[in-house]
Image (tube, rainbow, N blue to C red; front, side, top):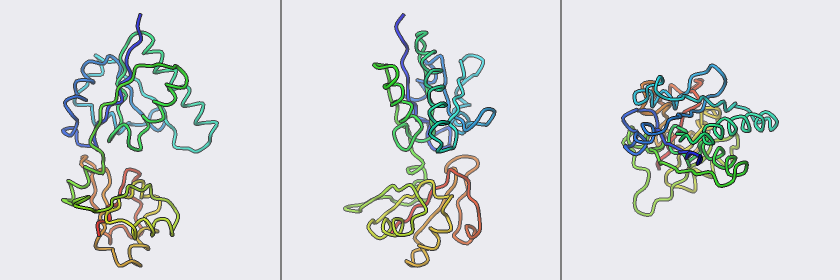
Length: 234
């Protein structure tokens, strides 16, 4: 029996209506739907996006644990386990649709999944179905153009590095800071010092039912959830 195909399926930023027709078809035609979650028993944001299009009684729903840790031993163990779980389905000739919020090749768990599968199992048949990223979703939701003419644009994972974050703002016309929640106080400090507070917008779980568009005042002392980004448009 030939092995199945692993599809990296972009489910979009949160609104189920932002899934593409091609992604919808992959969900309908694949017998296995794989989705990432932080730990056993936890809910999956990506799965919630596609719930309206998938009947769990008709599909093999494969929840894969991707722990939020930097411990290399734990990461290697869990990645090996997830790769083996996916390979087991593929080796049975089943197609697997691995869904991820946003786009599969933009800061996504699918990137590492793709690399591990290639390393462990060689010529695995894989196809990527692009999705609308949270960056595009935020631009639309905020009516905020990301680039025009010769504008320089940067996508920056926010981190606790004052000089690096300040430099990113100074050197670009538009900067999208992802994973900004953990350093929101630092980012607010930099914006104030550069007198750019009125040029920044922050949104959590953009386009979803749980979306929050923050004002700068509301962010003072707040703890936004993980899926939060900041757009600075000068």
